[in-house]
Image 1 (cartoon, rainbow, N blue to C red):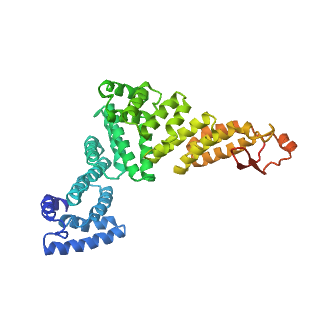
Image 2 (image 1 turned 135 degrees about the horizontal axis):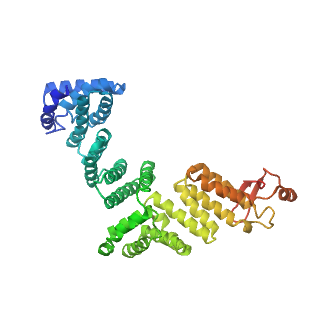
Image 3 (image 1 turned 120 degrees about the vertical axis):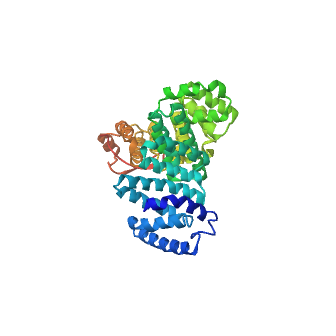
Length: 435
């Protein structure tokens, strides 16, 4: 049936969309009758999840009145993908794939939103015709140039397609870095408009994970260094360098130092203050880190950067033996992301390092803070299992500082009882003996 209607689809579509609002149900009264009848049939089968039976009436709707409602395209995508999956005839399957890709063009003509529709066409193209990856990449590039609204999926696939094309020899690594910068900046921009959106935050995290093994600092830095002299006063170039090097943890490179200082001089703001702090962390200049972040961490424009800044501030405070302030910074990070295990680790370190200051005798009271420290580490392990190895090592180390059974006995303290850790910590914990 597809061969009989496909040659006239473009003509009918053009006529039916000349005035979409006036001709939602087709050009003629008979068209309207057929459109409404098939809409009802297609929707009924679709709601029953009988997508194969929904295909024929949906196809009539697409032929007669495609601009009737955007849901025609939403349902049509599911219907066509199901039909493609079940079709065994190679030629018919290809016709269905062509129709699926065509629907994204038709959807744009009816309802606009070209950037989003191009991105979804590219994704479907790769899903069903992976050998067209170069064409899909160009479609996705155009989609990102037009803008995909608040969509968090397209930026990730844009980067993925860039990596595939680089491996195929279609583009060079420098272009992949550019795509990563564009994709991450886009996700950060929409996260700023929708703070706390977990889907966008996860997309950013997955983008970083995908980029992580792709190139080393030794590969990235020379690419940017070749452009330095011509672009060192270009704010966009400096932002790109600092963003990519920061995400790749190339913070101890001379290029990162130069770019960060130049960017902070040209355009000082909370983001450049954070980058200056990252640079100074590499030099273990923790007092300066505190100065840059103390008033700027809360002013960063997305949750991911705020968490990173508070964690860096917590590390700096603990390194400077300002334990109460270190705990406060870690707690600010936990308010934003309760599953950030590193925040609990820094609190545990603060407790352990201040243990001798929080008791008047060495047998028990000066060791009690280690109980509280291990409590925090167990919380870290619960919320952030990816850090299990690091956490277990710290638990083993801190547990060696627990009081012995004899020390507890002579102090008249029962194992398993509740104990209040004093000084600045002020937390209840459970008495345990040394393993």
